Image (tube, rainbow over all chains, first blue to last red; front, side, top):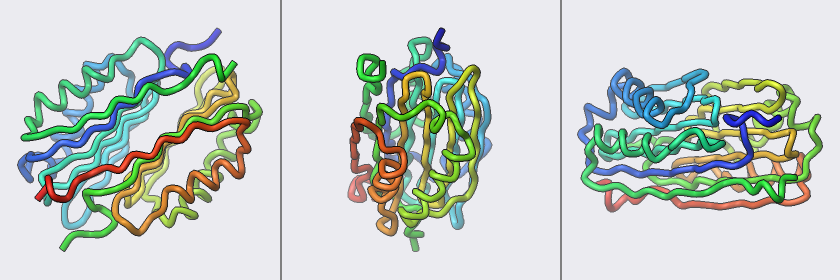
Length: 124
Length: 124
């Protein structure tokens, strides 16, 4: 029997957010808390999180999920963020992660690309 | 001055690989070594790596790069792999990562999607 959370089918969402104040997206604690909230909204399960502050600014946070992963890269000097969330199976809703992130960060503009991944027929 | 490795423009490649033997993609040490080799080929710099073995099979490896990230999720029961590599700036070539992974894993079939990310005009 296949585990639903680790299934070869899923949805991968790539996002670009523009026009967010420097201080917000250079605050690692704030960003980690926000990503955890977003992951919970998506009904995904966090296994482990790693993060790095770049010099002179900018953050990367990677979250290993039972259902795949989340990445966030911030560019405070451009007031901009790249993120992606990939969830396998049908129990998570990565769109809810995206909704939460956008609600909280309030970008002036966003660009979202959603990609369906996997093909159960081809992998049998 | 902006650091080239942390720049708000980049290339994100999403890949699906089919038809790879179970044992190869359920071997965490082998997969980590392969991903490190692929990252080196792409001229990217590894900051930190995390990984998880799933029960009864399957692996996830996430690599935090100076230039963004790599993720790999394996599904030995489907002989299949999902990966993505995102590199910012112009000093890395994520296509070389993809070439290396395909050369080594020798999938029967692959599906590769390359997405240009970021817009320097919009983020100014």
